[in-house]
Image (tube, rainbow, N blue to C red):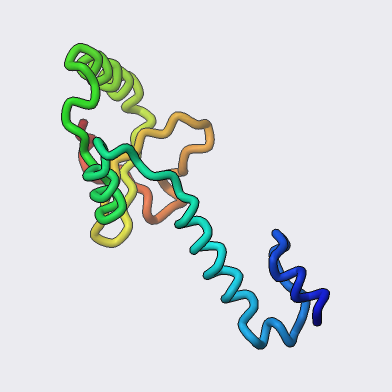
Length: 126
């Protein structure tokens, strides 16, 4: 048991001790690892703490004026050029009420006839 207790604090994925596992060793290791991670986690710069809080709460964040206007316009123009040029690779993916308009660049793009969730019934829209 003492040997397994030492292994509790190693980087091993599992502790091979039925007794320790019955006592909750795996759960305790997971909780302990999360606590250590949170204590050691880098702290964001105070100037962006509101953005970080929004990202953690909502899963995404919009940062106004992140790019200078000329760079942003260049990105928009390049993206539109790619979109216009690659329309033959666009497929619509449906999953329940959800819908995604996807541009596939890879040779392994989904086969429209074999996948019931992939179709081109909706009109292509930029």
